[in-house]
Length: 401
Image (cartoon, rainbow, N blue to C red; front, side):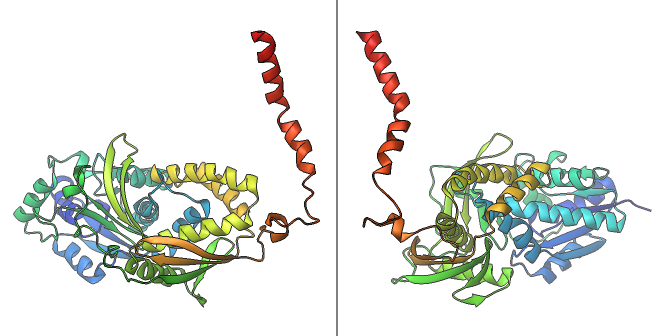
């Protein structure tokens, strides 16, 4: 009886040709696992295609809510942004897909797992570190590191030879990844960092030129750091992000063009569309600005950088990420309130910040003198803070004289 391998299957170019390749080179029965993280595909068509290209079985896992509540929202609360711009859409989706892939493998009695990631990218690390953390006994097959196909053109040739229909063509060569949080674009004209993205590269966001000529306001409500309502409507996580994606996209919010440093040491160029995520990150940051004490805000910025790095590097299932989550969670207890944003042709500005836990006090911040702050007190602490500076200046004068 043939051994079984579970393939993380999307129906795209790479995974479409991997099914027949696995059968030819390993003689495995291939189980295709489709993880629905909100990529917007016709799942029924994807399943049909997997069977048509040789899958023995197809398993569909609806991961949309778990993706948001277990991965995206913790990163949102942490303030995780990679290299100033990237909101980690692909990076956050990989561990939840790989986790369920492992669970399917164990449930189906498979001895191996496989993925369609290239040997140059970050995703191979994210998938395989998850496999190793959750089921180290499973064999890992990475076709891109084994086969003699060197380019997308080679993959297209292989697909044509095996009668496999694919959406890509030799003219339309972008590699895209889509989920509830974002859409990423690589390849094509983007491989040259001197090239601007083509208007046709963007898929879900309007350009600023095509966005409405008037501002749109949106309010986002949080409960302990978790987004729970939009414009006064309480929504489940999936509906909330979908609505914010619509609002942000029509106002040209969330486009990013980034040259980033991959984990493997290569600089790569990608374009990302994260309309709803951009609104949520902006709103959450503004809520923290009024609700978190100064030293916590400053220290949490370091945590956010490290958290983003861990996510990007595929180190989700690690004790450090769990420890950082514990710290972040302690900072979110009073992160309840509402932020209202104004959107206009790609720009996001803050209209209002409201929270019963706000530490912002007008009796202290106002220029009007009040009983809460005696300005004479400032002289003493400035003198104390300046003592080292005065000492250095006097020493310098004595040496120079």
